[in-house]
Length: 154
Figure (tube, rainbow, N blue to C red):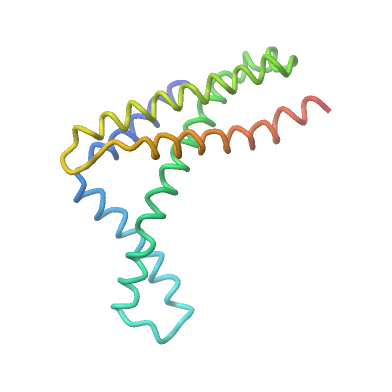
């Protein structure tokens, strides 16, 4: 699992290494596909309406991607220690410490990724993205706790 988390972080960094133009094209293509799908439910949508709608979706899609990709990274990191955690999580205080370590690792990796982005042409580093990435990790880890650890404590 640790190798999976490292590989996945490499994928995240490779997306961050895209220039601003390449990144915008990718996110706009996804937004446009979503807008085209939604236009299927309204027959009076023109191509201009679809493009306008895609423009509205682009920024939220980019932020949702941040949230999800680091949430998945947090889940991979949490799963990386599962054989050890079965023993350690019997004591919920120790299990909570492991989750805090996962969040801290994701926070540091997100900050490192944003610093990397600062040096990519047309991109910038954002503290808000680091916070969003960390929040995505926290939400995913809460779900992992609710699904796996609560069952064990019953």
